[in-house]
Image (tube, rainbow, N blue to C red; front, side, top):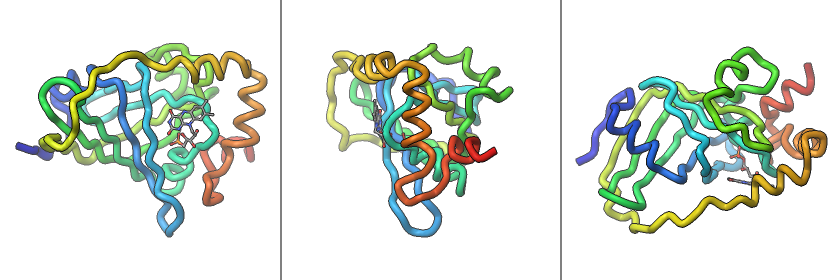
Length: 185
Ligand SMILES: Cc1cc2nc3c(=O)[nH]c(=O)nc-3n(C[C@H](O)[C@H](O)[C@H](O)COP(=O)(O)O)c2cc1C
């Protein structure tokens, strides 16, 4: 029923491309708060069978970036809400790629140009695990919310940068984020 490998098959790549939502979990090494975030929109890409990336938009917290900077550990989960049941967990080591870097220039064209883009989270996969997903209900997708886009447009580039400087430099446990580290340089 379930399987464990260390890379994404074309079938799993196709499954990912059909999903509207995914979840990412990270944690600090020594206590503190475990973070679990839902993410949506057309923002996830399989770069190759062992590497994936996600375009992250500006929000009030920046937990994933801080935890990745400290220890790199991340788990991403997709589950089928339509069609045959399946849960896919991607375990790996991640990092935040910031604007103004060569890696950003290389990766950004693969994503939609969304207002509020904050960083690209890149993950090298170490374990690709599927399980049955029988406990997940079926639900029909209706629409993306456009609230995050309208929120970012209303803030504008200058407002967003100020917002990130105010809110996104440290995790809730006080760990620096990649943006926080960048700000110090
Ligand atoms: C406009 C806006 C949009 C947000 N969207 C999300 C979201 O899609 N997912 C989420 O987990 N938190 C969202 N949040 C809440 C925080 O940004 C949350 O603390 C942050 O996502 C946690 O850090 P992470 O994104 O690195 O996981 C949003 C907040 C704002 C202000």
